[in-house]
Length: 83
Image 1 (cartoon, one colour):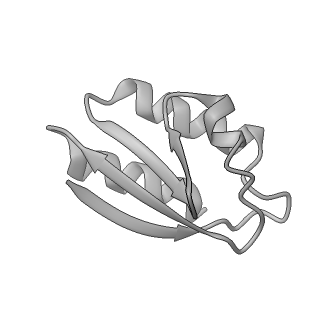
Image 2: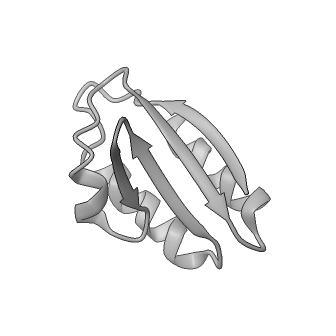
Image 3: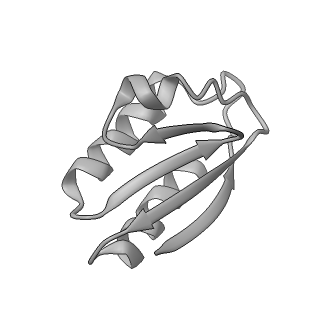
């Protein structure tokens, strides 16, 4: 299992456009990807689940990845937040 913590960089928070990019990456992966904000947990394969995290600008998001391609997926997921 790989873990990382990323900060939401968008002034609109974690909105539909980056959420859909995350879902696209998650669906192309063989790993299980979970995003966590406080007590809320989202499956990265679901746009609605990600949006329901209600992550605002500057908030920390914990990323957990488990699977055979977790190293590559961790890099691609964190790059979404670093652009």
